[in-house]
Length: 88
View 1 (cartoon, rainbow, N blue to C red):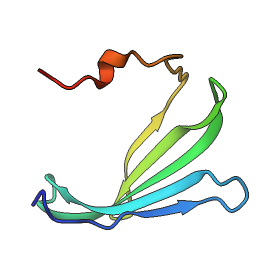
View 2 (cartoon, rainbow, N blue to C red; view 1 turned 60 degrees about the vertical axis):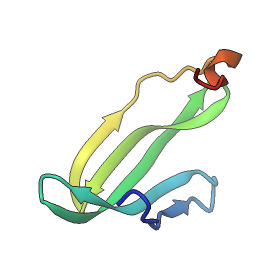
View 3 (cartoon, one colour; view 1 turned 90 degrees about the horizontal axis):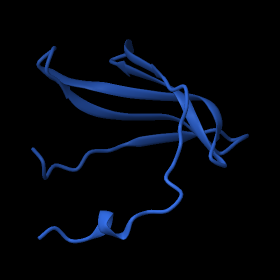
View 4 (spheres, rainbow, N blue to C red; view 1 turned 180 degrees about the vertical axis):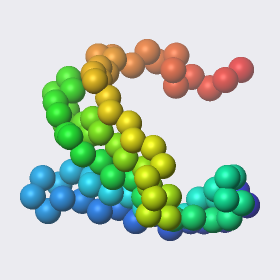
């Protein structure tokens, strides 16, 4: 149900303050039931002056589901005001 509020747990590194893990409940289409989804963030590197996780591992009910490694991250220097315009 889209109006149902869910709990998201966020864990941060005491040393760096970086987000290390998020955890929440999702519905698995494959298993046809709700499962605990855990996202582990690592390999924080500089990207245009910001530290960004370049590796993300996603586990479902404790089993590896997806691992993503980003080679390069670049951000737009300025936001175009049209990105925030109300749709007509």
